[in-house]
Length: 88
Image 1 (cartoon, rainbow, N blue to C red):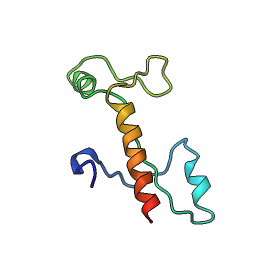
Image 2: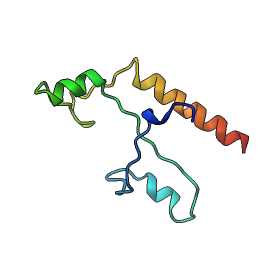
Image 3: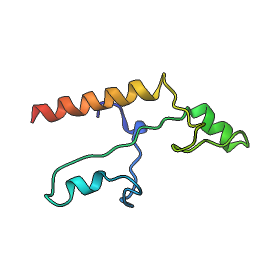
C-alpha cells in the first residue's frame, strides 16, 4: 500500500536458488517474508536491452548498485514493513 503496485513485481515461488533463508523458516512454519530490491538503475537496464553493456551479476567484480535509488528504497521498505509488523 505504501509504495504502490507499480513498485511491486510478484514472482512465482521457484525456490531460493543459493539463498539459505528458506531453511530458517520452513521447519517450524515461521511466518516470514523475503523481498528483493533492484540494484541496477532503469537507465542501465534499458541500455543493456538496446545492445549496451550487459548488467553484471551479483558475484561479478563489476557489479554496481544505484546508491541514490536502491539503498534508500531498501531501507524505507524495511522500516515500513517493521512498523506495520509492530502494530500487530
